[in-house]
Amino acid sequence: MKTAPKELALALGMLALTTSCTGASNTSTQTQVRDSGKAATATIKIDGSSTVYPITEAIAKDYQANPKNQVQVAVNISGTSGGFEKFCNGETDISNASRPILKAEMEACKKNGVTYMEFPIAFDALTVAVNPQNDWAKDITVAELKKIWEPSAQGKITRWNQVRASWPDRPLNLYGAGKKSGTFDYFTEATVGKTRVSRNDYTASEDDEVLVDGISKDPNALGYFGYAYYEKHQDKLKALAINNGKGAVLPSRQTVEKVQYQPLARPLFIYVNFRDNQNKKLVNKFVEFYIDKAPTIASTVGYIPLPDDSKRLNYVHLYQGKVGTVFGGEAEMNLTIGELLRKEGKF
Image 1 (cartoon, rainbow, N blue to C red):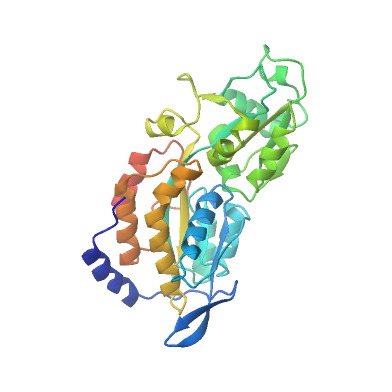
Image 2: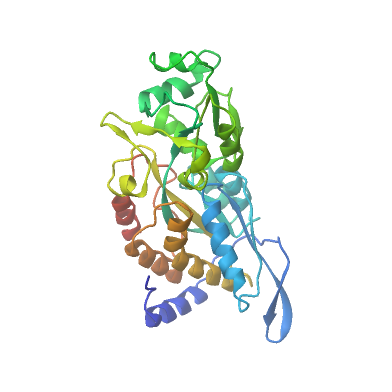
């Protein structure tokens, strides 16, 4: 895919380098970078969403494979909320996020002098999955998901036939995102109707691989996680079609692009600390590479790439040092790719 014209990149790049914003310093992986013939210590540290992790991990590996990029990129998982805790404390350079930054997190960043740039990098089809031995469930309604996951279901909705009478009288074993996960925030609002409101008697983890492993070994399981983890492990999982009242729809790139997979389609982001220190050039160079590679890598690991317009907008926002968020501290339900682009275009 084509990048922004070199002339625009050069002009706007110089603008970005002359724009400064005070932020907290960060120390993580120690790397040696040449600066005027002297060895200098620099860091790029990334944490946050396990949903975004496969994209960032792949891009970081590609970046480090080039010997000209004499830097190590440490990518860790602590969930979107856990990642923002570190990010807003100035502990990380980039935060992976499976939802927009929330008001409380915005306040924490402001309190600690952390100014940030927001970049949408892909779309996800949040997937509800069961074990392949499950031969009775092929689809599930949003109302049934609420019935399963709302707080009043705890200790009461414990068998499959309690959800749908035609399903067998078998244990219903649940697997889902931990409470520091952006997936937890999004899923609870999309199904139960309120963010972070859920039953607690389920196997929870911020690491989607843990959830995949549990469901793949449990014939009575039902759980949810990012689409990339389903695509990676589809030989040992079965996705359920989601019915929001307009018919059952399976998660896929096509159903997200056609605005059919609702309400579980959502944008994914990285947030970049717009710090004013020696690390800024290194981080900006990496983010420029990230923006260029994100569409290809997102598709490769199982997410829905954003169109060229998003890539161009991300470049302009990077070069102009555009800080802040277009979401006002709230995660929006049923957002489409087109609506996301319109928001970013007005930023």
